Image (cartoon, rainbow, N blue to C red):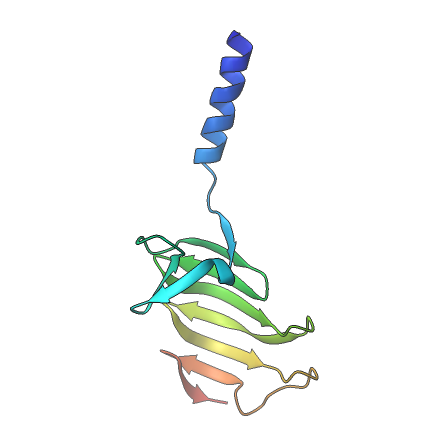
Length: 114
């Protein structure tokens, strides 16, 4: 009995100490400029997987992100800072060619140079 209690305690602690949960963007909603898990009122923090891949912190995209077309080809990759495009972003067309018009350096989600 003691071993079962110990095992259950370890399992419970490991579940609570998990650094983040992974969600697909379909499991999330955007309200008032923040991202939430559906049916909650707490801004989401965690990893996003699927055709959009990256991290969200306090309801805003943060760090490295990658977007994929439904055919599996890369659509875009770059970084976010507090929910805004930041630094170099590379965008691709569905056929895999570089989208030179969209690609470039961004600050506060505004393109500042090619």
